[in-house]
Amino acid sequence: MSRRCGMPTVRRRGRSCTADPAARRPICLGKRGTMTQSVAIIGAGLAGAVCARALADAGLAVTVFEKSGGTGGRLSTRRSAAGSFDHGAQYLTGRSAPMRALLDQLGEEGAVAPWTPEGKDRPGDWHVGLPGMSGFVKPLLGGIDVRLRTRIDGIGFDSQGQVRVTGADGLDHRFGRVVVTAPAPQAMALTAPLDRGFEALRDIVYAPCWAGMFAFAEPVADLPDLTRGDDHGPGALIVRNSSKPGRDGATFVVHGGGAWSAQHLEHEPKAIVPYLQGALERCAGQPLAPVHATAHRWRYARVDRALGESHLVTGCGRVVVCGDGLVGGRAEAAAQSGWAAAAAILDR
Image (tube, rainbow, N blue to C red):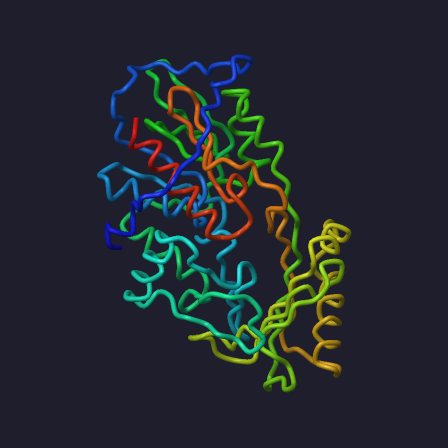
């Protein structure tokens, strides 16, 4: 990954958690201003990936911990014998100069391609990852120590001022800094015990999303590549996934609306599939017989209310929180927050 896309110039409005006199300062020993060369990043989504790339390009030793079995976060691709499905974010835009530069670089490397679907209803160029949406983040994490299926359950400080990161397996790892990119409720559980200022994360509000994945033996006619529906129904977004570059087969992704998904949030996936398939059939105007049908629950799919900060950081600068929940609801906001978090570490 080219260095020029690793650390763009961004305008940051971050908040020091200990700027509030009522906030309890963490026990943060060690010399101020000493450049510590190791950083742990919790989460391998877009925010974590751009942050990791920027810090690694600056010469820091970076370790990324990801609780799932793959990278990308909501820029995810689910693969099956019937085809692949981008069941999270459907595309990325480049509204800011840093994001456009990143997309240009990834395009030169063959990791992304433009997508202009039939039914495109919003301005600007749309970009998709190759061969799936997770193709966005894989080049960013090249050469970086990424530990999959590793859940982090705790963060603290040792007597030497190092950050102690504790995995679900009970093992401790020590770093000079840690960046938490998890959704706000999970990030707050890890960081609020260190500094009450991180309780500001409570103000972030998300909407969930049920995503259905359907594959067919034959192409489905009379459907545009993209259709938007009602947020209060099971067919808020219907995408012909196979219309994207590099995708084969006859595959569709159906996103339930935020309000509808919230009402059905705790249902089992198999109980959700008929609702999402019904939305697809109504759009197609005919009954359908998929050869593959499944559903995935995104509990923190969309940011409905952001914090309005680029990142949060402890007074000593050793613990930073970033992610789209701080900046805004678009995937690009996650990248902006990740870059700001990296800058906060490098500025110390």
